[in-house]
Amino acid sequence: MADETTRCPFKRRQLKDWQPPLPCNPMRSSVVLTSFCLVSSVLSQSISELLGNVTRAFPNYNVVPDVVSEFNPSAYVNMMFTDAQTGRSVTPGSGQELTMTQTEHAPEFSLLAMNGTSDPRAFGPLVLILVDPDAPTPQNTSYASIIHFLGGNFTLGPSGTMLTNGTEAFWRYWYPLPEAGSDPHRYILLVYPQPSNFDLEVANFFASADDSPPWGVRSRFNVSSVANQLHLGEPIAGNFFLVRSNTTVIATSTATQPSSTISRAPPTLTPLSGAGGIADDAASAMKILGLSMATLFFALV
Image (cartoon, rainbow, N blue to C red; front, side):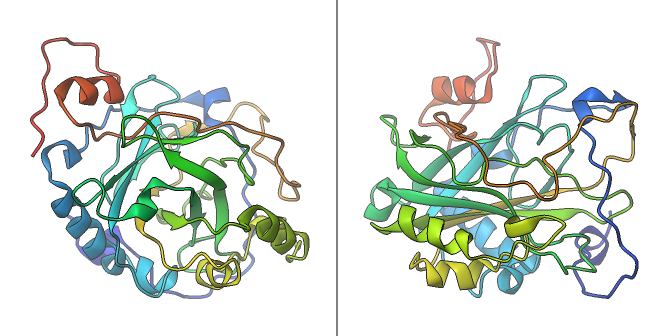
């Protein structure tokens, strides 16, 4: 088993002559890849255990202090992806490594607060921010952080766990695309209470943000500084996963990721509804994970 330094090589050093990788859509390439449906261990853990795990993982993987100065969550946010190749549900635990194919489609989100309603802020509206603090590589973070998703007006759905969003995301989802040979990148999801004037303030912020190439205003995004400027306060929940460059992909097309100078994304309603891999009972768990075997049950603690 690799030690923590090998698994999480986020010590800084300067690399020279880096160029942005050529974009490539894994689904439009010839691939030699094995994908798995990852049924997360979150199904067998209590909320307090989940919060404890993610709270410890943030400093262990240097999310604290690289992205946020401190992290004291009162709720647990979960992500569920649909593998672009197999169609299977993928629900990562905190710090779990996924493939580029598994994270190609926008995730769905769920949120659980301690004792269900202990933090009234969990009911929303909420702001969700997903960033990569390891661009272009974990050793050279000159473009960090890259915004991979930014959306507001998320609220808990009727089930009390699923986060839904009926308005367009300010920045639509960009799937992870680490450069070839890079160590795994961290992708950090943070959940903030949404202030009443957020929509106007976020628009004004990006209107005056640095639009330098290669990724324009999506790059050099300082989460803590921006959260302070937009009056978001401290995150009430957070989670993260890892993705490394898919070295088994053999590119045969020129299909592209959004260009490095892309402007604000067009309206999107993803994610609108759904949740990650936590449910209130076994039936809900099977539905959320997309499992069709009626004889399969999950015991939730």
